[in-house]
Length: 221
Length: 124
Image (cartoon, rainbow over all chains, first blue to last red; front, side, top):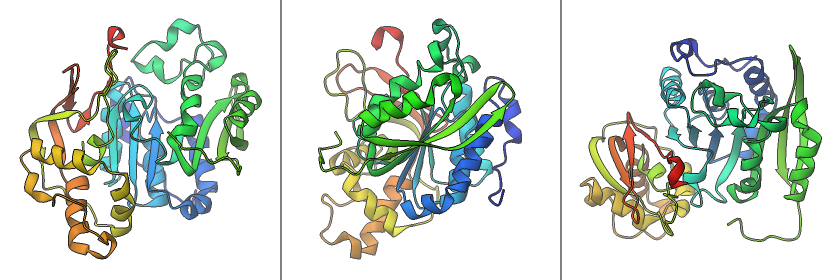
């Protein structure tokens, strides 16, 4: 990697925080591969949902610098402290941490303003009841088809994103990436898999969603 | 929590019609943080900010005099104005305190600069 991986040795001090693993590193690799695109996008606001260790937002800060605001949310009380520490040790001075469930409290004010949206969701297929926890299980438990958390976000994405806004999502084969892309097509977005990797039993992909150029403008909120 | 973030937060407690803006009750405020001034970023943010809410936020923390009443015309060329906006939205941090929902008066705590906006099951 040309871009240095952010320092994250402190993450092990947070037992309930998901330590960066294959899925995290695949996302970092994909963002690095897209770095020229991201720099040309000139985003003003980046939002990461479920930031966990905070490594992904910190990595985006390495790519894009301090000329934008990075909002990073998580519902896990240890994760939000960890995200703050990751920003501090990596000298990221434009990161704001909010403890929240998805982005509900940042809407409607953030609608139409998010230039870069990133989500490494809890994607593991589990019994539905497991998604309701605020400890480390919330970082992986995705319920039926592993889709129950991410499916709650999808309908909000068209409102959240700015006209040129981009959404990156981590998924596994069981989440049915093709079906996710067709969901987004009906929401007015083109979806593509920009990078994939087999990691143990998981076939991971990074999906990237871009607004379709269309004649109907409509307001974002 | 910077005032820029406060400007974006809304309460969605069940039954609340308008949970914006959240009132700030701060017990610890840091006004000495230093963030590099980036005029282009500030110019991009100004149209996105609710100016009245930013003014209210400053008043709640006793810093109402930091900004003029109105956004100046041609602010893109007014470095002094942009620096004032930069200082208020990026360099003032609420470290400890609460955000109060304007309708339900439900209090959302801020600790170590991070607001906790999670609702209980019965509030959703």
